[in-house]
Image 1 (cartoon, rainbow over the protein chains, first blue to last red):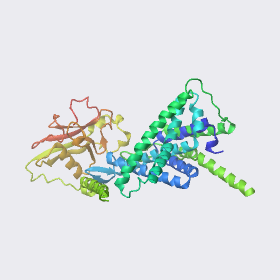
Image 2: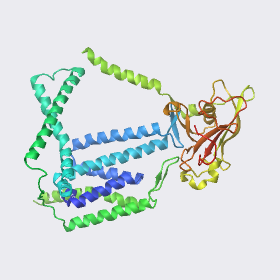
Image 3: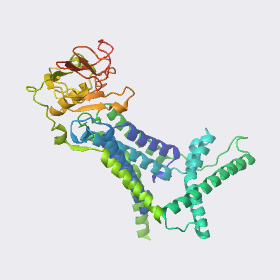
Image 4: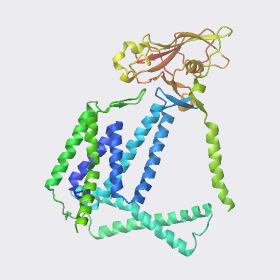
Length: 288
Length: 179
């Protein structure tokens, strides 16, 4: 079993647990576990090219946050240098590194979420109670790829007609402004069309019925139980101050190995499952 | 295309302005300020930086600051010391000079950062506003009285006694504003 095979409720609770811990436990141990877990899982899920491109973006965000924080916060006992008479301190820099780490971990976990949690699952979770929310979420998620494809199409069309040929940067900028205008109008038009088409098919007039093939199996229960156990262990420890981290004015980090281990295992579950599955596949292939 | 020069030129221009406006000093350079000798000066002032109010309200102090290094046991970060009063000095510039020569960290909001048009002292020696209760912060007095203007606007005269005092609740004492 891998993460995308579990019942939507189990995997949703898993993601909620990891994200809540990453966002609200301000401790280097938790952040490191979360970043590493997300990286490993993304490495398994994405193609190499996609992975490294996303990684580059994440690192840029991380560095930007890390460097920006000390420009605004001057607390801390170890000044590295002074900018316009204000201290650029080591503590503020490390706080920024930590904040950036937390941010990029959340971004990466959402990327994993969007890979694992497809449209079917979203509709299953939200469809019954709030069909409108489910519709908005699925449409929004489909929007950007659609927009990109449409952009490509307009671009290619323009290239064929010879209006996008100039080498000059300014000319090309002008040309892409034109493409953007065309893109906007076609998007608006398609939005109107979608609305009209949905109305014509009677959306919202009656009760909706659902067809899905999700069944809550024994494995889902075990997975859910393990998740909740590990998450609550990590949260209880962090609530009692065993994972405390203070940066100002001096760095004081307490990281007990046990809660750290709990959270590390929680973050590594998808990767472990993924590795197990691919090993099984290789083993089966070898037997043929 | 000639037009293409515009973009790199704008980038270079922005970079030059950025570099011109940023002044980076090393730690030694920043703290390498020395106060002039008071013996030969014709005008002097007395400066005290006092955080003894924290000692009476130790339970509400941020626990990371519970150290001799941040809150001295006698409550004085700078005991009453005589400093030279130069032409064009404000209360704040005397504090800044003293802090730099004594290697005391000082954090403040610049005069352009608020509507009062004056510097606001946020933290001295890593003791910040709100470090000891929600109404705590730095105030200043001159000869025991709170002036009506901010610390970078007030021009002290010869022999004035300037005190920067950390108050844990500025509503309690009638010491006035902290700007």
